[in-house]
Length: 163
Image 1 (cartoon, rainbow, N blue to C red):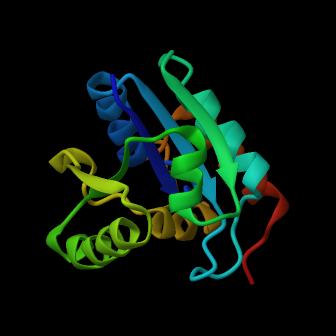
Image 2: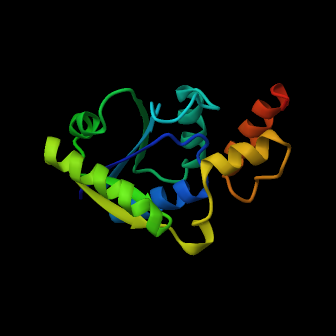
């Protein structure tokens, strides 16, 4: 069975991410979920180790998933873990353009193909940036994130007060 790498900032990990990992775990023999610090996004809400913890705690029911963090090129990490493919989720048409350009670049520099997995319509509206904003102002995001993430968000937000 194939091994795949699912990279992302996962800040925070949400039900759309979990759905994609569950689908990948069903389709492939081994799934590596790699939390990254995305230099194109401003500072994160959670540190890499916190993200790894929330992802790991959210995926305990899947025995063919490993959670790692990375600070290197996705293509190098794919090679290191022996990934046959990189997987990326698509929520809407707007995601496709950017993800396709990244996939073509990754293929050109490494020979590693990217597979796109669509989000189910029930999770297609969920985005980490919306979850962060809602949680910062005391909103309930429990329907959008796995329980371990909801707990970590409450703890984190209790320490931060919006200005």
